[in-house]
Length: 405
Image: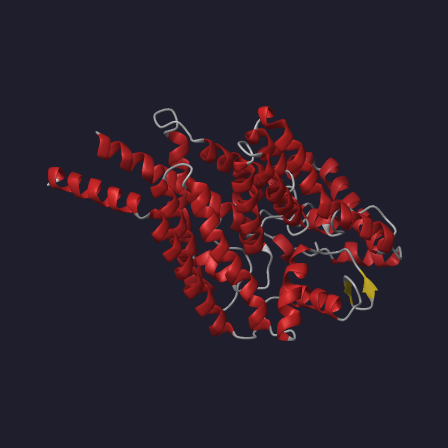
């Protein structure tokens, strides 16, 4: 029986290897079908408060009020995602369904760029990554929300793919850097990942590194200038770092509490002090740092719990029907995580490819950075794609060894 299975396994591998590009294109179509179909089902419904915030920020740009919330200019949220929504808002007159298409299209792009990145390991790995990315439930769900995580996923993959190309032709450093810059003002926690990519590009490609860093700085620097002019302060990206740090570092915080922890006492104190937006950000940061310094043991345990929660299948927030979605999340995520961990465990026998190493260290770096603040499953979305790439690498390494044995 085993002897019969081996030729079949070889035949399937060779069939996939000969058709990887067609499979990736089909996966892009599958992604559009699944995410687009789900977006049609949702229509104009907004399910989360953050979606209303991003919609309001986009509306302020449309109205000519600049980046504002209410009547005043703000830098509370990173501006990248509202800017991505802006053309769709202008074309549709603010139709929510049309703006959902930003996530749907970005997911389709992520399917393709996931394929391009993973095919550096093996063409079959690229095909597997494309199919899994297109059908991954968390991606389909998140793509239809007005959240920045799926656009951030696409920008991260573009940064990596173009950056690795820049090792051979420096001109690719330009789109890589611009993608990294837009990623920085969309999800700022990924900014340090650019430095990791620089290490993988290598010192021999010094021209590419310089171009990459300069291109990556253009958009964030322009936003810093805007903040200095409009807000009167140096604000690298946004003024929500303080509240995020406080939410994840206070006496009532837990590894999974996220935004559900009560910080109303700090909010009241900030109002009593009559602080502006920048002052509130600093006040919250100072309060969080003070608690960490006063409670180093508790802070360390809390940090470890937040690191662990990065790999959870559910957040503490409960909504109708979450039991079924939690089961689906667990069944789709943990096999991939197990395969990714296995890739690390067998790295001596099957040496890691450069892309494997880049994905692995990007996951480690961002998990550790996210836990400084607080962790949410949706924050992990771009990292799940890197996990899928490692999982596919495991399957291909095992499969290729069997067919050549």
